[in-house]
Amino acid sequence: MLRRVVLSMVLSSVPFMAMANEPETPTSLKGGKVITADEGGALSKSKGAVFVDTRSALNFGKGHVPGAVSVAYKEKSDKVENFDGSQDQFEFAKMPADKAAKIVFYSDGPTGWKSYKAAVLSIKQLGSLTTTQVAAMETRDVAVLTQTQIRVMTTTQVVALSTAQVVALTTGQVGALTAGSVTALSSGQVAALTNGQLGALSTAQVQAIDVTDVAAMSTTQVNALT
Image: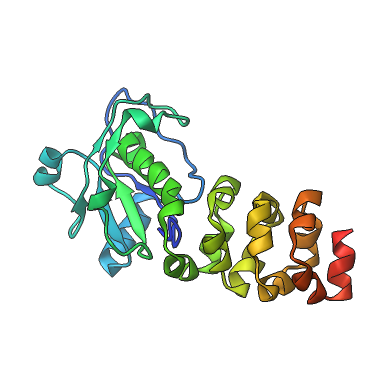
């Protein structure tokens, strides 16, 4: 199951039709989830997600998941996990406008690199989310964001996080916040940080906390900073 608010922005690949002599895609997806055909089928029946067919328009015309959107992924990069996305073409403009929707990418089953790559690149679109879309993210989606995704968030996006979303951040995610993002945190967000999260802050991050926010912290929180 993939969610897109990119983050929700969780994204996925769904097995569809295997191609011979092709390497299989990775079984995990940072910032998203690789799901099975059965899981994809359940989502399709319940209409719980938007399906994006990344195969060619020709193959889409031969048959596709009911209600799926055709957004062909034009692939030139190698079929490896650390592929060079700059070699490929994918029209993000054709993606569903609702960035809070669950998105399921599919192509050719376990060897469906087009869907895998589309999911990877879509997850990297985090920086394009509006503050409203960030605020709409479920806490479980926030919890699976990679440290790289956290690091590229703008200060306005970070400020848009609710206290529940802030609490959902792992210590690794908190440690990935830029000093500018830490400074931008509101008193309410800082007050919501757990002792474990505060203990994960680097010296530079601690120094970036606004003095008014420090004043709003409890004694145990201040002690966690040392």
